[in-house]
Structure formats: C-alpha cells, structure tokens
Image 1 (cartoon, rainbow, N blue to C red):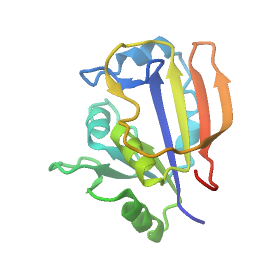
Image 2 (cartoon, rainbow, N blue to C red):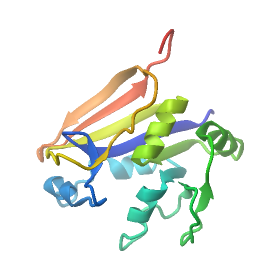
Image 3 (cartoon, rainbow, N blue to C red):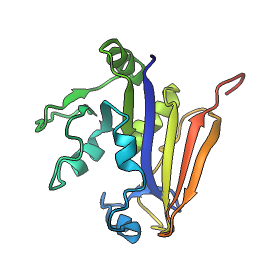
Length: 178
C-alpha cells in the first residue's frame, strides 16, 4: 500500500494557525468537554507524524506528550535535543516520504504551516482536514506560506459543530493540469 500523507490542522477564519507569538489560546473558543472534533479517530489511522520545528516546540511544551506511540520526525535545520525518541530531518519531503514508505510506514500525519506549504509545493499531500475556528486574529502565523503552484482539491466531507467550528476534509484531485 502506498504511503498516504494527510494534513490535519486548525485555522482562524482569517487564515492563521497561531497568534503572532505562537500562542494557541484562541482554540479555547471551541473547547468543549469530551469533544475533540475527530482528532482521536484520525490519530488512530496514522503511524508516523512529521511536523515542523515550531509546531514541535509548541507540542513538547504540553503537559503530556500528544504523540506517544507514534514515529515522530521533526523538520528542522537547527540542533534539537529529542525527548521522546523523535528523529530530525532536513531536505526534500519527497525523499523523506520515500524513506518512510520503504520502512513500511503507511500513513503520515503532517502538521505545521511551513510543513504543509512545503508539501503543497512538492505535491505530496493526499488529503487535508482544516478546522475553521470562529475567530479572527487580524495577524498571526498563516496557514499557508504561499509559493506553491495551483493544486485542485475535492471536498470529501464537511461538518459544522455546535461550537461554531466548521471542519472541511479535502482530497487532492489528480488529473490533467492539477
């Protein structure tokens, strides 16, 4: 089975994945006891997590390591003291995903704005789930950094939640000119 690369991320209505300082407290507007918006179900389908360094730095600060039991690769060119058996990588995502597939990995969860932008540029992203948070920040870290050519997508599923969060699940449309 070929390796599947999936993005799963939250963004504000105006397209930011974090505040200017990297903070995520805006996610609190949709926090509900017992509601994870499908993340646990999604997480059960992945064996590997590839994330950008800034995203890693946020996650490693959580009280509990949210990626326990997963093979974790951090995209970085800076030195990193690993804490949970992570590995680091710098270079082409095409090459990284070829290596992971050769290792028998089946599904990668790709996280981080720069990581997702690189995946779009290299055209290696198979599907993308974006949870739109009902808040505008006006400034922050953008969902996409730009610079990738046009990519066409097909909507697989959409769901609106009582909290106001709207989740969109897209799959890459393949074909002539896409």
